[in-house]
Length: 554
Image 1 (cartoon, rainbow, N blue to C red):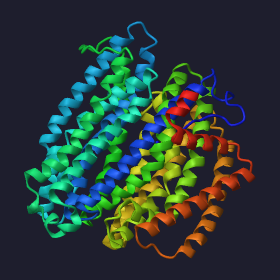
Image 2 (image 1 turned 90 degrees about the vertical axis):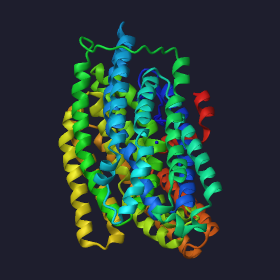
Image 3 (image 1 turned 180 degrees about the vertical axis):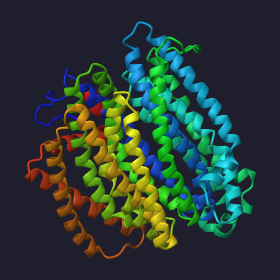
Image 4 (image 1 turned 180 degrees about the horizontal axis):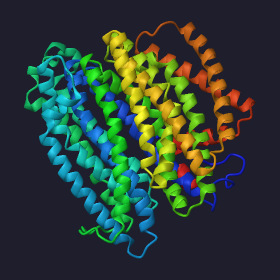
């Protein structure tokens, strides 16, 4: 979730005249990502309207629908991204590149199919493993949802496979626009669900009773969410075909260099498997306190700025990083990393201040059908989580450098330390805090783990690259933090005059006024401090708003 263009001299750091190309790529991707994320939030709003923020059905469905996402992050989001992009970039430099890509895709699809089938059958075990619901009836309902949701894993993986091939061929937009289709399908399903069964507020007692949920209700809710993921993957076939790509299933993997890809996959999988231990602990603790859906919705808000800015930058930047790493151009890789850290940091500092200050009114705006009680429980989880946004962006960029060098092994020790922080902090919160604060403790532990991971990761990357342009990166971040701190104080005083959060309209006013004040003050202070990267930030924001128009101008 950017147009990484150097403000003074747009061609200075993006060598080879690639500034315009990267600007076009990120503008097109950002427009798709922004639309998708807005629709994703609206989908979340509709889901809360349909089944509430913190009811039995809401927590059961959240847990079931999380399982394919966990598997996606483990398999497609990590292993396939770590393996496929560097391998495909190298493949298209060779005469037999298409044959190589066909074999990679065949292997990936076969593995995903087999894994998806096995895990769907294992739905009762997976729900029991990842959950600690106190009511067996809620667990049983989660299992019913899981049978429909787990097959999403295959289609998430297919989406990743096809999308990364498109990226490697220089077509970035469709990969970021495809989730729009997913959200539209899911929202249509939710609209039908509400039309047929009514909203949660009208039938609270019935919806909270797991026995009320029969096959029609479970199928309509979970089935349409899965159908959305199917559409997200299948729609990529069209731009892939138009790009000239023709896939032929090919078996036999000896002699085509897959051993190197296998080693990267092994270490990437091991590192992510370590991370899943932390996910498991957080999942068990939050389900035991009936706060897992609060945690998931806080994470949805946390991911908004990261998805809109950081991921768009990394997707375009990673392909180039892989090519430059393959060419052993250390200086270019270091320059790209520095540019990414400064650009992302400038935005995520502002996003952190905005979301932390406006957590409660923002929750009221996003979930107008909920009472202030559940929203009051959600807001501190959001704050605890969003404080790690800057570190999360830096750690994500450090990971991409490792992947570009096909070195997943070196990340494993860092990931072990991070998961120890998450587990230790979450379990400590369970011992010391009341159950209503367990999700806050888990979110805070996640934030601390990102800080530790970013610090260790950038130090290690700095050794490989003979530095990360640290002084320049640190200067930008310090100025950004100072500007954001002062802007937050000004905005907090203005919000105090508006009084406590009331109805939806009042919350909208608070978000608009508070967000406007803090953004204007932040930008003004950065301009006074002559932060050159401010131009990058402004172009980034206009890229989000301009989308296709900006891409055409590029």
